[in-house]
Length: 356
Ligand code: ADP
Ligand code: MG
Image 1: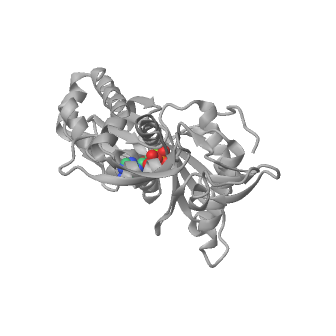
Image 2: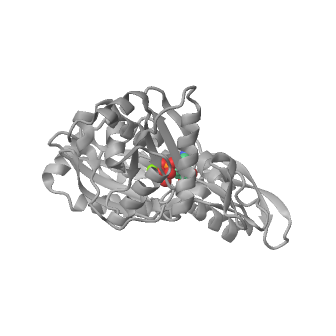
């Protein structure tokens, strides 16, 4: 790339921002400051005017509590942009908020955004366009497993296989990495959200109790598990009895919730096992040494590393600060742009532009 003095000058004064645009949560890191935003990827919209009423945490709290003309939406589905305009609004808001924190007006930022491995050219282009439309001066893309691996400190630049299993809200992404690239990847639409649904179904079938998604998620956080707990727990769960129609509180145990989650957990285990089945023995040998790294919020389900280790006969470990791995890994690109920019994903020229 030719040296461009204007770019160089802008670069001195502008922010370098990395973004993990997740189905469930969006995280924003600013170089030199760290993670400044960590909020749910939800936007509340007035259906009549199409104007956003709330974004992030505030919007998530409105789920299930909105009047008729108001909807709360998640602009990303299965890791990719489902609603372009809403994604752009959300990005604009988060990028804008980071800018507001500065006392002097700054040139527009450079932004690196994570995308799932194996997405289509059109999906990549959509993230790129939304980021540019949201006010970036330059936008770069990085595959999330690469970012997660960098954030988790895996030796992905070496001639050595490693595996990252990123369990998010909408999808579980399994990727094998070596020599700075993705060797193989799989994406599965069973992750944190599906577990919430499992809990809702279980309580409805067993107790005729209806609970909302927010409550189901809390149950999962507090007493959900994938492996027997050292001491099993119980929790009081308020909901509505579907037979009487009246409010009711029941006591649920971690053993029951484990049963509720068993199907989804098994699907995740099986997907990782299938991915391993296809690996050459050299990579398996490497994995026996390094183990399998878990990242993403869904990986925080209690006992999940133990369960996977048990079934796969490999060491399985949770990345430190698993929910921030992707954004921290993406942020590392700006720390040493010349040497790490080869981790970024290129866009094909002229690939279908989307309206912005
Ligand atoms: P995404 O990348 O799709 O935005 P995240 O990596 O932020 O997703 O993970 C979000 C998911 O992690 C949600 O389903 C959330 O309920 C789940 N999660 C967060 N903390 C925990 C926990 N302690 N136990 C189980 N699941 C958790
Ligand atoms: Mg994620």
